[in-house]
Length: 611
Image 1 (cartoon, rainbow, N blue to C red):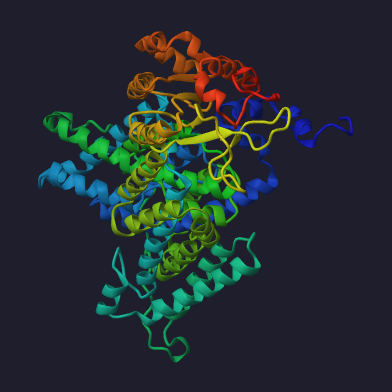
Image 2 (cartoon, rainbow, N blue to C red):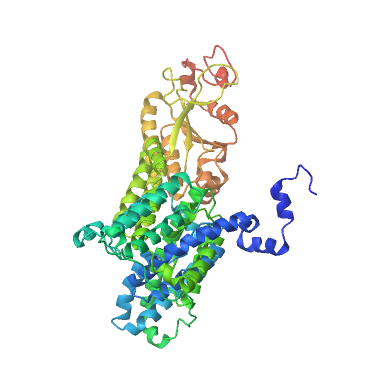
């Protein structure tokens, strides 16, 4: 028996079966957390995911101009592979609207009207997407996804919620495909679809409010199936409504193994175009997958390993290429319901794949009654849950520039393709970051009292009026990197200080440089120019505790030799002691500030104190 003070988790981990320990080393620490409760939650979440993807997979295959079986196959083996090999616990991969539309747009010019090339081209593109994603993972370049900031994620999820809600509204009206609500109004609203969708929506919202941890979305879908069946009965309560649009009997979802390069001789002349299209499709699929993984990670507190997630997506698309499926990536329409349904581990994705096989094989007659309006109602609930209203309020209150990034990303998501929207958000974040980095802080330093042992303080905007400075020596703390983008800002500040210093006589400048993180060649030239200007004015330039990487560049460029090693000091006391001895004695003789202890040794000093 374990000691009473032994943590429960450590006892449980130590008693794990060796097979489970080995799986945990390969698949992740979540393997250690699998128990009866998590399996039950994952199985229920997987069932909902399978029911949701059934109509979607068929529709997305049609968007790409491919057989329905390819869409269903993309939701089986690739879904399980991405779940087990990826990093996120709740991301569910499969066919999506973005990848399907992009794939279909690429297939049309490549096939050039030859229908027999469409499927081989789709499989070849999918295989190349998997290889490119795998190469990025092995090169450990998946960390590029870290450039997607939280503000971009906030805007992306809110914009995606708007898209999902927009098309879900059209589905509630009885529209099909990617029809808008305006098109649904123009073609006529289906009263039966609106009734079934409205009932499903009420059950789903009520379940979310009062049975959040239960399978409320699955219950809502079962209610939708029952309502659809009841409305289809002759003379249902005297209503003359036609039955709402249903999924119908789906084709087989079993992967069909085949060699993607069966038409290699015909595809060889198209290889340059295929590679270019695969690269663009890789950006589409990977950008969307990483964005969704980060969204779910932010909600659950899970740290997402970008390289691992990239690896999982690459292996999933490789399996899709060999298994007669179309391109897959993380699906927002399935990942959020998966999380809302209570999924705890990646086994929910595996369960969704297995459930889909069983549902298509055994429950075809029942699944035929799934109303599309009911699916749209569930997606509407997911869309509402996606909008993080407290986060928007917090960003507005704390940082308007970050709010602008989030808003721009949201608008781009609503008006552009998803992968382009993410790119727009990333570019906005980088622009804001560069603007901030281009204005490093330069703060005047001094003292706010005459007591012994007083520390250096920032005297810019000090409360109680202007604090005294040495009339000959300027103390300046440099905060941030001096790179080519920041040179103009720093040079303007130094020039303004020299201009005011000409009348004050502050011809000597001590730069407290331990917070100057780095410099580049433009930064080194800036300090060299400042050295020349200071010496021409009869003063000099000094540095306190520059960082090793800064000193290394100064040494390589020869600036350290031109400056002089005796102008670089390890501490403030030695710096001030050395610099004060070089100040103009005639100015010191008439000085009443007497800021430093060393001033007691200068001409005209009536007293002394210690710093």
